[in-house]
Length: 255
Image 1 (cartoon, rainbow, N blue to C red):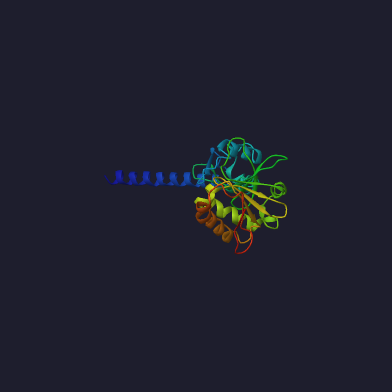
Image 2: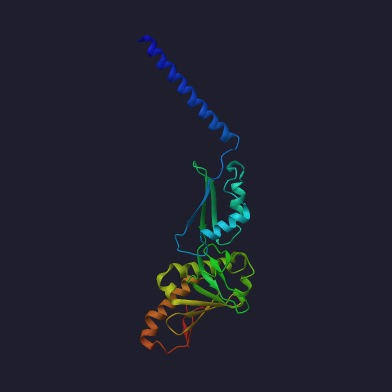
């Protein structure tokens, strides 16, 4: 009986030793960079329902940045460098790559949200993103946003970000204001902007052209325009005026 107990203890020690050896081998393989990429998992954050890019397009960008990721040594992949290459595409706001415990490389991508579309007479259109980035249009998806036309839009197409131009920061704040306000988002159809920064608004519903001036003080100008829509037009008639001017301090001029 005593001998049988000793044999059991010996077998337990042997099993424990084998487990330890296997763990050391696994640790050694990982330390030596022998963990192979089993698959690439793409996760697209699409809270704003933008469909400019899908999983196939992200995979195409990955392939051009790092061919043959599947089967490659995970520890030899420069994931930070691949992130930087992905973010060169202006539709991508952020990209994060990491390897999970199963040997998969997970790619998490945040897409930029468009808030305006540059309409050009001389060439291809472009979008202005929420952070001011100027990005190309897509053949597969059209975002319903305010249109930006005129000489300003033609020049802006050549820039990477609207904040690079003189009136850019104020104009971006104004476009954000329009896109975030339920009434103005439905009412403002087009901003025609001259190279000097003078804005004309073409509304969606009423027929009056709005002479808005430059974007500084835009909230006060929209407040005056709201007075025109709510108090003047109902009394004088919706078709009485062709233009309304809110560019001057303390004045609403309707003609």
